[in-house]
Structure formats: structure tokens, C-alpha cells
Length: 175
Image (cartoon, rainbow, N blue to C red; front, side):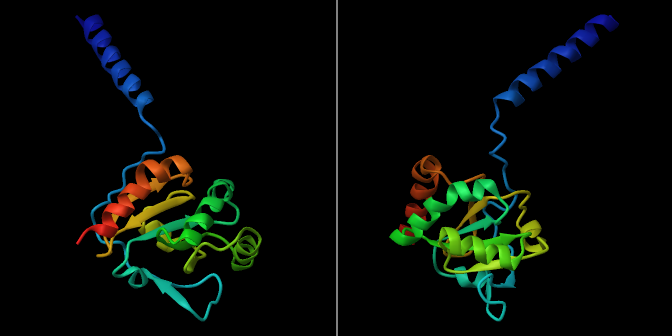
């Protein structure tokens, strides 16, 4: 009898393992989806005398891109963000995460600055409130300040075309 119980438990564990292996580790659900974006106000990367926060997103569909100069994947997505900003497809704001102001400024000067503004989150406190556990991460925020989507990993032409752009267009045309 004990042998059958052990075999049954082993089979159940195999089923869970098999299912887990089919999941995409980049698709980590956020408990913030459908909820108001956590409020913050931080100094900007460009000018510590100026600040940026969630109230800057009010009334417009916004991408909040969490990035850092030390992030290799951020470099991969950056040309696409620059192109989106150039086209005016969506307002792109940045949250510079656990970086130095000097490195962040140098990085933007080298690769281009797609951000309307980029907040400087030196200690990562705001990132933690947003549920960030790595960079890059990108949030789609609707006109009412509600988080509608979280992308873990770089924005790519594929996930832009299949997920982000259709969602943003839908939100921009919604009442």
C-alpha cells in the first residue's frame, strides 16, 4: 500500500514539473494589473532640481520603462524605445533603477533619450513598490492611472507588435 502512495505522489510531482516546464519564466503575473499605479515622485535623471511622478501620467496612456545603465537587456531594447518616442506612438517615461546619476546620464547621451522624463530611483525603493525584481520591465498605464500590463524583459519588435501596440491603441481610443 505504501508503495502505491509513493508512486502516486511521484506521478503527481511529475505532472506538476511537466506543466511548470511549459510555462514562460518571462511571464510573471503582477498583482498590480488592474490596480492604480503606486504613487511616487522622484528627482529626474537629467536634473535633480526637477521631479517626475505618477501624476505626470494623468490623462494619457503611458509606458513606464524601468531601466539601468548596467543592464545589458536595456541596451537591446533601447533603439526600439527611441524609435517609438520619435514616432510619438506613446508617451514613454523612464524609471532609472539602482544606478548612479552620472552613469545614467552618460548612457542616455550615448544611446539617445526616448523618455519624456526619467525618474532617478537610486536605492530602488520605488521599483520595489512597483514589484520590479529586475530590469528591464515595462508597464502600460491607462489614462486613469491604472496598470494594464507588465512586460518583464526587453521590449522587442515582436512583443511590441503582438501585445503592447494593440493594447496601447485600444486604450488610446477607449472613452
